[in-house]
Length: 379
Image (tube, rainbow, N blue to C red; front, side, top):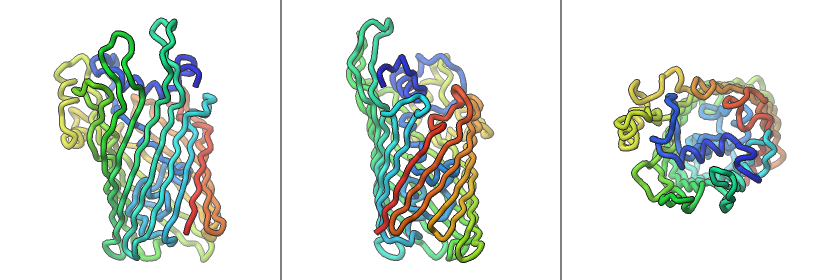
């Protein structure tokens, strides 16, 4: 990326403006939820991406190690390695902004599994200038990553649980700029996921349900001024799926996911008391406050809905479609359709998804008109 002022990709500005400006410096009074490390809200795998980011209640797939890890013991293959690649802001002609991920899982026995994964988000190379645009400051390459390690366990024939520990590193800018005494640095924090999966029948046909509490962890700071620390995107999600086995070779699965951020709404910046309350509340209190009418978003605007379907032929060829809608009016009611397919050859599976172009401006998805790729190698 040659110049941040030339391309002005809105996702990068969302990052930089949020972490480099205090709450008092913001001028908008819109009620919305802002978090650090928003890359953790991006679905990294192409299977989910082909069904409107649907995954929580569907039948198990190796990419569930990025979400509902409680499903991993149901995988038929005892271990597998996977990689995914997602271009970001492709419509702007950028090639150095992307999300890449890799993971590995292994069955310990018939009841339990372990898994590990890595997500890396590159924001490309950015050339900074001062406010007048006359002085070029040193360029930087912002990037973020998370590293997970998890364990999954079958409690009985129908119910399983999963737990994941996560380390998050976010380096947006480093050093001091101009006359400011603030020293900007990389942010670090730890988080955890808790997941559950319930299936109606032992062979996985019929109804399934999934529950995921994700990114439950500490706040993050990007400077030597640690008074104002920022929330990470804690989320609660519930999903339901239904698998209809048409015959020995053909099946169709339908699903729906509902997600909600557990982060309080951004404060009214003209009210000092409101700003102080926002930053001083504990993480645990922030989860409960996000559901309150005083500190949270209106319930009708806080939900993200994903619906989708998958056709499976002999566990070798798949077709997918999905729809996603975000009811947040202040962010433009983002909604879009997705398509996907995959095929398996021997011990390898390849996933591809496509986000149908829709919206414009703030409602335009960064993945619009983008192909996402993923590969799984079983052992």
